[in-house]
Amino acid sequence: MSRPVQILAALGTGALLSLMVLCNAEMTRNAGPLLGSLTPHATGTVAAGLALAILARRSASERAPVWAYLGGLSGALTVMLSSLAANTALALSGTLALGLVGQAAFGLAADRWGFLGLPRRKPTTQDLLALMLILGGSAILIFGAPA
Amino acid sequence: MIGAIGMAVLAGALIGLSRQVNGRLSLARGALGASFWNHLVGTLALGAAALGLALTGAAPDLAGLAQAPAYAWLGGTLGVVFVASGSWLVARIGATATALLVIAGQMVSGALIDTVRHGAEGAPLRALGVLVILSGVALASKR
Image (cartoon, rainbow over all chains, first blue to last red; front, side):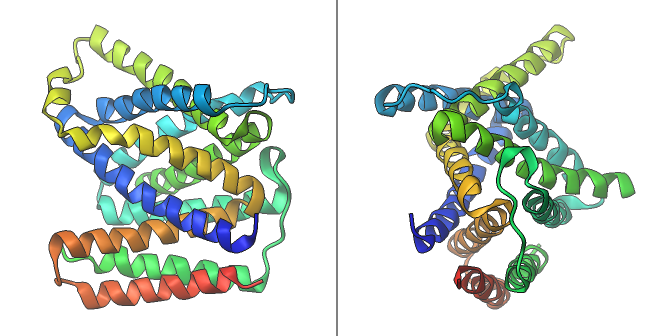
């Protein structure tokens, strides 16, 4: 698959995230943070199971280490940590902005050392400049939002 | 304050960690398979937490579920596509590029949603933020 397709897929994935946050925030407002996270996880399990049953062709031949099945734990913990941080003096905007910094820092480290069995990659000056522009623009959006 | 900052940064790093772990699983199980396991394990963990709370008397608000509008129930299905696509991308373009481009897509679409919902208030600053982000995306796309 060519790079432009991957870039567009990644941007679309981010747009999907905005819609997902909108849905899950509405669920949380009605049913509280725990059910607001449990409900989309449960319906997602059903949806993914159905999709697999319809779409899956190959039988899994390659084995994955047991820890590779535990990504969902980290996801469930993220929801808890960010709601905790959002209720401190950082507020939602500070929590969001620092979360972006955490994501970028983890990404750089993961690529540099090839964390968890994925390939190593060295960032170029161009990559770092792109990083600063995307995080800087995000900061403008986060802190410039009307209260 | 240091504790709160640590929590917020850690929450971001955990998003990356979960994408990296799911990306590794996608090499063996496919992107959709990785998304399935991510949601199943999350359901079991959160279900256990809900059960634990219910046993201590702090039962979650099940009646609130019925009050949520129908579209709120779509979050899980959107999440399946989100996790599958993140796992697929991280194994191909790397953790940094995936994180940055997903952030860019989220921020720009968020600015559009804000403009639709709240109108012109703050629009010039939003336009500037979007412009800076898109220039970063253009730079990241050039090879």
